[in-house]
Length: 417
Image 1 (cartoon, rainbow, N blue to C red):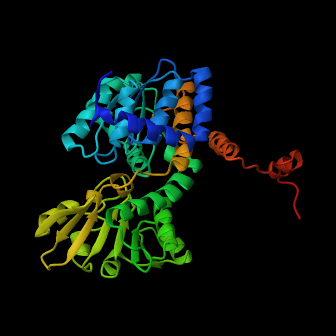
Image 2 (image 1 turned 90 degrees about the horizontal axis):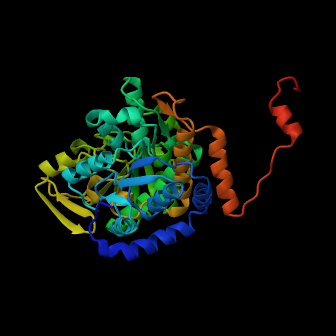
Image 3 (image 1 turned 135 degrees about the vertical axis):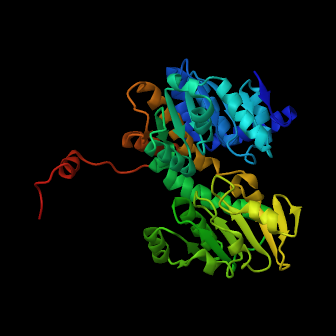
């Protein structure tokens, strides 16, 4: 099978990491067992643009067990784990990706996946879907279903839907409760701090930690930063989320006011120009910047590169910028998603839930071929519940169940005071 990876000799280490992750993904392994028996994806060619991690590898093998052919590339130039990519290639999977891809290689690899002529897609950030609609429209008639992993991608998809530009059905896996309430909150919260610590090794306790965005991801980052002893400021544009941050005990203010106060800044918004040079120029000497949104546009890195008088790489994925006022600003992971650029992404336990959603969403889309209109869809609640039940069973946790009388009461309106 064709592949392009950094070093195929890394395959042995990658395989060990995949096996280690598999032990922590028991719910997905249950789906893999069923897929191996039932082959619900037989005859399906799946084109994937996901972070090439040990957890993603286990999703790939689950889909293959279900009968699918799979081709995969990364969805961010800095997120590929080179040993995992090598292990996938060694197993005969079509894989393109290496950590530190050039922009040219990144888009070249996306198009190699589309040369595979998939009839189902799994995307993280919507770049694969965007390429299909802009450059590979000939694939659209044969595309049965797509899935989208992350908030940024869903935002883009809903914009496409609003403009009547989306030409095949896509399931927003990010909107599963078992995804965004766990992956976004617990996963992003922990892995973002992990990335910052690997870059900087600074003490979080006592620092003023500024979080831009208070969605599920921002809430997770703010919570974990507070847990490590930081004084947390939240910057928001949504009045309801800002009020929620205030009620959760955080200081809330505009970024321009937070800029001179913060020691560490993290963006988690899905939007562009959240931290600009206007903000950076007000920051104290030694301020640390990190982004945990999908794209490298939340911090105005291009302007920082233009206006800083000096830049140097001083640590693993940590760049030091000297401004014209001689203050030093430190940028983690080139302004790309810090949890994967500088760390290993979310823990396997939380990706277990997310990738159950991906596998079952793909199965649902194939089973409903021709019934779903070109739009953004959400998985039925019963499938979301099934994922949670699989996970609870796997971790040995039991819960109560409604009696028939309780179900009847909840379904009626007549019984009152």
